[in-house]
Image (cartoon, rainbow, N blue to C red; front, side, top):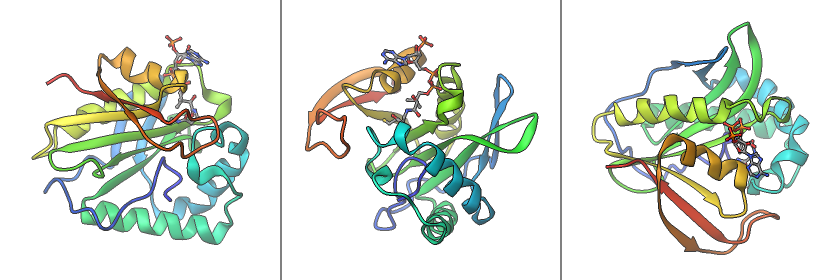
Length: 197
Ligand SMILES: CC(C)(COP(=O)(O)OP(=O)(O)OC[C@H]1O[C@@H](n2cnc3c(N)ncnc32)[C@H](O)[C@@H]1OP(=O)(O)O)[C@@H](O)C(=O)NCCC(=O)NCCS
């Protein structure tokens, strides 16, 4: 698992010949920057500090990650970027470049021509519009890639804070898929939101 959001899947082929910018301005005092191997310790600490916040919704947050696991995850994320399957970012504060206040990703796991955005925001920084602003920046970056015509955001129907993000961005609710819950608070009713075509 990537701790971004979800796992880079090496079985999935690249959906674009391009690569998104490694640094994406977001506004509001934050930016997205490509996640590298050197971020493993910060990622590990942030996930541990946010476990209670993440556990209800994130299948990979059910156990405390070791530093070695986070290093492996960060290294796989670097490979995935190079392969063009997953583009993993950290949300940083412009005023404090060492801080990470969230993790985001563009994932090719939903098939050709499309990328899915995954996200979480540090519990001390929620409720300020950061997820919405960062997802807006990622939506633009994804749609600027060659071969990408659609961006999706998936969330459980009961995850109101997450569903608010695509709703505020003007995504359309395409459907609700019934599937087995993967995290404790999920109902299994997965909302699939799409950029308007
Ligand atoms: C989902 C998450 C990323 C949102 O981050 P955020 O930076 O707080 O998001 P934003 O501030 O951009 O928007 C959240 C919206 O949800 C609303 N919201 C928050 N909790 C809510 C709740 N329980 N019920 C209804 N709306 C809620 C907020 O009011 C806000 O809307 P507003 O701007 O209209 O007031 C963050 O809560 C998180 O990390 N959750 C845990 C991980 C997770 O669920 N990730 C997504 C998995 S699909």
